[in-house]
Each structure stands twice: as structure tokens, then as C-alpha cells.
Length: 110
Image (tube, rainbow, N blue to C red):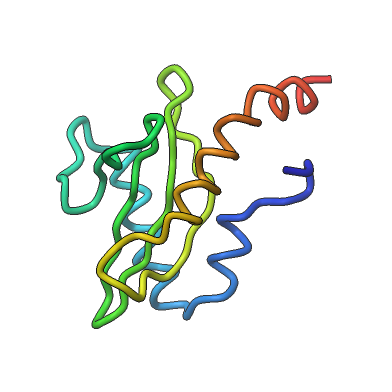
């Protein structure tokens, strides 16, 4: 991921302001609460420690993937879930961000 790219910001710019506000509210919960309810944040089974932030607004379901780096949550990207099953390509995308994260972190610290 290039230094000027922020997939979560890009995602937020594509959804309604009401949806973006709800996403921001749920993301604040991740930071503020010691224990976040599973309805908002849970580990994806069968992944390399990828977590899913779930946001429901009306009939739409928004997802933002994340992983942990020490005590910090690193958000990878977001999408609107349109089917019952999470698309494998979205999980693979999150895992790729995680795999490349240490490299990106070294570049940012120069």
C-alpha cells in the first residue's frame, strides 16, 4: 500500500454521510471500550488473526477489516457486505495488508 493511500478513508468517502457517521461511532467504540461487544467486532475464523468490525444501518451491512499490532488496531479496508458469506477476496485483501504492514511501517518511519 502506497504511503498516500488509505483504503478505509477511500471507503468512507463512497458511503452516505449517515453511514460514515455510524461507522465512525463504532470505530470509536473500539478505542474507548475495554471489551467491545461481538456484534461490532470479532475475529474472523480461519484467518491469520484478521478481525471484522461490523456496522449495520438499515438493511445495509458495512464491514471494516483490521488486525492487531501490539496494542494498536490497524484498519485495512472496508466494503459493503451484500451476501450472507464474507467474500474470500476481501479476507485475502486484509491478509495481504497485514503481510505487507511491517514493510510499510518501516517506510513511514524514514
